[in-house]
Length: 121
Length: 476
Image 1 (cartoon, rainbow over the protein chains, first blue to last red):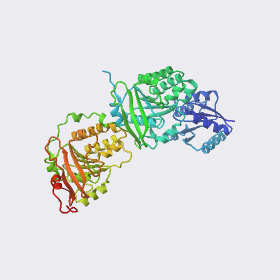
Image 2 (cartoon, one colour; image 1 turned 180 degrees about the vertical axis):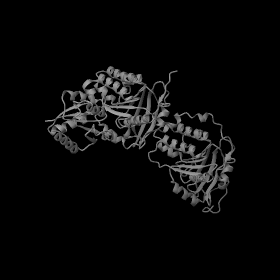
Image 3 (cartoon, rainbow over the protein chains, first blue to last red; image 1 turned 120 degrees about the vertical axis):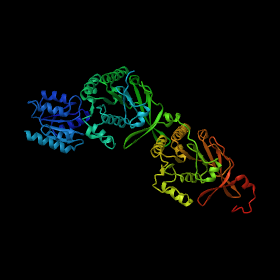
Image 4 (tube, rainbow over the protein chains, first blue to last red; image 1 turned 90 degrees about the vertical axis):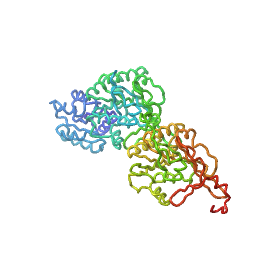
């Protein structure tokens, strides 16, 4: 069972996504901002990160850059879900393996999660 | 003196009632019930601030997702998605508040304000913060801390709250100003109003001002009579007379209409008020551009009416004559005044025909202010050197009783012309009489008036006409 980390300051979106992933049999942790996500993944490395862009303290972009610079975390694939910054993220494919614009279709995101996790295993 | 530079709202009417905008670095509460327009207003101010080179931190405490907020704002002209995450950042501190409390939110906002270099902080959901607080003292401390740390870095703060029940909330004492938005019913009609309830260090224009929400966002229409217009006091009255378009009427008036004056034409429906106005407008020219500001006949119908009466108006589309028609549906009084004055100024109108004051009256949901409104409107028109004719419909279609058009209205008018209809031998006799001319002699006798070839024709003094027995009661 793979651990997926969800970073989103919007609590209800984070919880909804976590429930959805748990229904698919994954273990999920949530974090309210990039810094909290970084703290969690240093304790318990996830197989995948799904992150929002605009968050307090540390944005999704800053989080991805921090992970990229950290050899221990650089190999974690990242999916960005964003309302308006999808374009910025798509210009950085080295940081984000997939980008979804909110609101995104549930099936599409789940399929991408499966593809990434299976690709890794 | 302390430099109180302003944070303009980008909403001209609001900047006017705030005497130039918010005070930069100060804190304000924007309150109103859900749906009153707080979110639209605060985002509009935020995006205006971005255009002025500022940076905005927009903090929510609510369950509504930011994406849903963006979708709602997408329909508004000012909203620009490309700014999101760059110059304006939306963050939710719901989890911090729930898990760690108010102190942690204060700390987080201090860090975020600094990190984003924010010059405007919008905090949406003060009521939720209050729910989390154990005492009023905690709320006041929270508000004081947020505004204290923001002011320290020169950042202005808008606290949004849906509390509207309590007149005085404890946090009101802490902020520099309170702006309240309301949406109430006047009869069956919805009336949106804005009020500056508190404004420390700045002379705001008090009382209620109407606003509307459209594709451009919020437009505020300050109460016309509450706005000072320095041009009015400095006004030197215009001199001379201009033609009414009807030579016989000019004679009754003692040589035409005093330039820059306001004339009321009172009379029943069908009495010839609009026709008199068309005569007046037929004299419009490049030197004296005319405007018809009406609520009843559409431009098309006005031209048809002029044609059938044989009154020659400047050709349709000519810059000499502008026809502005507004339907009677759900108007905002100060918006009408604003539209009228803006066009008069922009087009350099010198001959104005308002048909009629009743259209303004119907837009006023608070009638007692009408006299002040008309007085202010008329003062501005005089200051602009406009000669104005306005109609007022008298309810009695047939009768000799004359009541003042509205209490105190006559006092603010320069001239008054009365049109009447009297039944004589089962025949409707129309008359015209001049009741008042500013600073001038005039013929006060009632005269016969008839619709004839080329428009209205003024006949003999009614006294003589009625005294002389008619041999033919049908044709006179």
